Length: 373
Image (cartoon, rainbow, N blue to C red):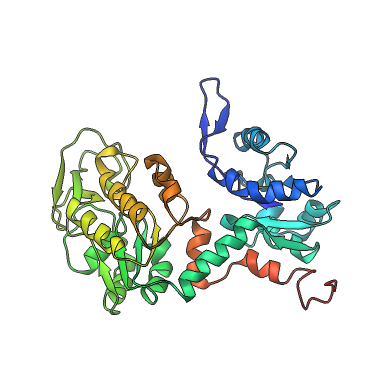
């Protein structure tokens, strides 16, 4: 069973690592226990980190194995898939070794299904295959956003790099009633409107794309105020450096040179929250500021509270959005919490993923020459 146990780890004083957030492990438990209860011998396999095709003790699966054993005894966990270069290159010889001795394959790794890696797209061509329960639910819920969302449909999108999400934003702009954009990526949109954004992160190559999206006719909410600080003392400017005790101010969207925005301001947070409150469907992906620093967490907190209180159907993308909800104790108050990060974005943008396409073409799929009646 391909799972996505690429979970965050923390180093203990002893130097060992332990799982810091087991959300993705817990998401696979319904399928794992279903298989065990029906007598299957189950081996889970996952990647962890970026070991670059060679064994690396830093990315050993042992901390994950210990947590999995505590949550679901009886499931074996293979070594890190990315210890072998054949995983990322989808080498047929690697796939053959991976499936050797197994009778069936289950993909329960939605968050990895946007990658055409060996363990994702290879086994369905060799073994009877199925989607896990979480994968099936991801497709059902995210597909409903594409085809028949309750109106108004409001999407709140944050994060650092507009380049990473421009495809998603363009896709959403054709579907949503309101698109609210926060996080560092909002400053490229503000620059496209002619605002002075100081030393905030701006992707100059995407300004024209932002301008076209803003002119497309969708209602787009951008920050009208931001929480900013002076970054002239930072070694790496707005993109990095240590945030010390510099003065933090709430100001309009125009910033002087040397100042950078790190969160949406209170007026913007209230405007985003009001749009969420009126929504029939809400999609939230990405924090609205540098929420790991409490000085820049209020925007994300306010939107998270609004999503949790919404009377509409709420969907939250994985990654930092899920971490923020968990930190605020609100994870159990949303309609659906996706396990995907990039996979969620790719599915919404394209309506399909390589891992899903591979399952539809599996040896047991209807219409396949090798399918059993």
